[in-house]
Length: 221
Length: 221
DNA sequence: GAGTAAATTTAGGCTAGTCTAAAAATTTGT
DNA sequence: ACAAATTTTTAGACTAGCCTAAATTTACTC
Ligand SMILES: [Mn+2]
Ligand SMILES: [Mn+2]
Ligand SMILES: [Mn+2]
Ligand SMILES: [Mn+2]
Image (cartoon, rainbow over the protein chains, first blue to last red):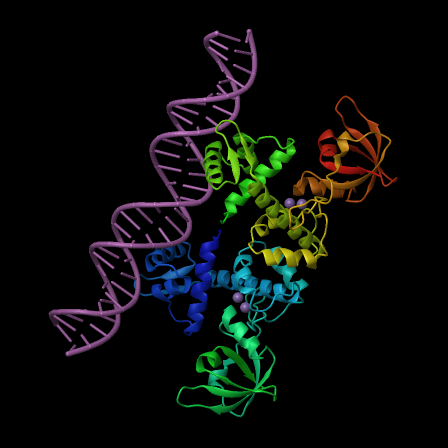
């Protein structure tokens, strides 16, 4: 059974929205906003995906991926992240330039290709944004990190990823001198607007809004 | 102006059919057979391509690419051949395994990507089947070779490419011990069915049908 | 629990790309 | 030059994906 380009995008959207809310059912409007399609179009597609047993769909009650649907979604994510790794590691793109290209490349159909690409890259565990790359069986070996905005003060932290992939945000980070692997320490936490003052690599200090801090992922060292 | 996935395939088909017959007009039926679509569908598409000024179309009289159409077709061919080179050189695919994957990859849209891929591969002049790769300006720096079937006896020849890209034919060549770069000499030429007896690398001899010989490209050494 | 607001689905319509069957134009053969 | 064969176009229809507007269901508020 073949899954179309568009169907793959819907499955991927449902997968990530579901993850975002503890694997809960995903609503028609959530998908509609995420894909920038109208809700009526989403309903049409949900029926199709349901007919193909890729989702469990109860009208008015939201959707969940079936095992088959989840497997398909994870495979697309695997391809997306492997191609991003390729573009940055091999072709020397910047990390803020690769997402849109990977959105196209993730739909190339060839199991041989994914496997050979994975090997060529040395079986990377993470993509250039710190997102874990699932293996061929769909397993994630790396745990997702916590948001900088929810880290405790005084801990020594290391930047492991971002949750906003927009070119705008990634460029802002680069300009602020923050990259993957940098050490961070929270110097001040402002209760009023939840902004933070952080020290980067024990060198320069920096103010971050709550919005920015919530999109930076860190691990405690 | 955007050219769709399907339109790109039509332009590519028109380009290679036209080349095949000395840049003559290409007929609806030729395109129809090449793309395995019905003639009525081709007519529809020719109208669209004509509206977009990508072809010159006179009903019942065949089509020719405009400069714009030719440029677009050559760009797709450039991408196809660069990706084939990538798949063989970097990912270690066999030369008979890459065509179908490249048919998908040739439609990825990003000028930055093509340029960086070209550099990564060391600006190759030919793809794994010996087909010349046009540069970013659409220029072919390498000349196409002649068919083995039309070569003169007694010349020392070297295999530079193939004109049938099917996995079946490429496997047949591999099994017969013929690869790019091999030396060939025509030992006998049979006038009746135009079959050939050739010597490969001054070692083993081999019988080739006219059909096979017409799909092997050679240069005189 | 009735009434309003919000979310979702249904109804009907559009475009791109495909098809079959029929009509029209061109080419071929004598 | 004219009839037959071939090629090409037109007419009408289908599917995938999308849209707007209207109807329906569910959720929220008093
Ligand atoms: Mn991405
Ligand atoms: Mn990523
Ligand atoms: Mn090819
Ligand atoms: Mn090739």
